[in-house]
Amino acid sequence: MAGGTQPPGAHRGAALRVLLRRAVGLWLLCSACAAVQAQGLQAEPAALAPNLLSVPGEAMLIDPPAKPEPNTPAGSPLSLEADEVGLASWYGAQFHRRRTASGELFDMRALTAAHPTLPFGSRVCVRSQATGRTVIVRINDRGPHTRNRVIDLSRGAAEALGMVGLGLKPVELFALQDDDKDCPAAP
Image (cartoon, rainbow, N blue to C red; front, top):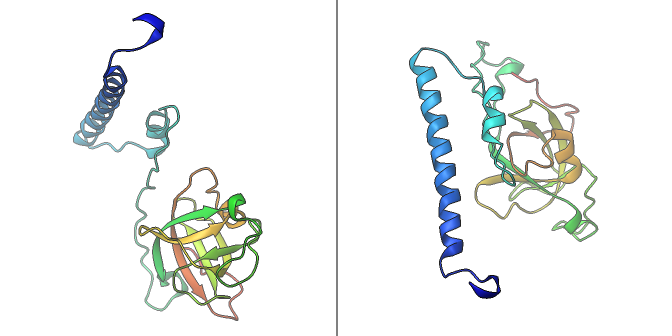
């Protein structure tokens, strides 16, 4: 091959090899998990994370283990259910100091958020299902404009939840009344 050119299809072959290696790795990981579960053991997600996140340049969102339902009587503060559950995303520098749908300037460090339907000025408690961290945000924009997300947070709110760098995080939303100062108690 003169001049360092590659034959047609060389890039496709390399991509297929990478894809095949990843598929084999995933199959081996699934087989190992199945073998562990067949013996009645449980693999800890934290022990699997280094293996799952070791592909350079890629990240995977690992769902936290499901928490058992607390046995609390109806009407107690612990039995409060979220108004919405889904994925949260965040936006920052690219929109900093631009006008939001409410007309105010977006401040990426403020604790604000975009929601498709809640009135502007509404306060919402956002709880991370992965870490249990909470933040109270004020709705000042419309969004997210992607189907599988329930709220778009400012960078400041995303930092409070520890989700900067992750991109998406599973959250619970609790609409707050004007006199509510804190988020509902965690279960």
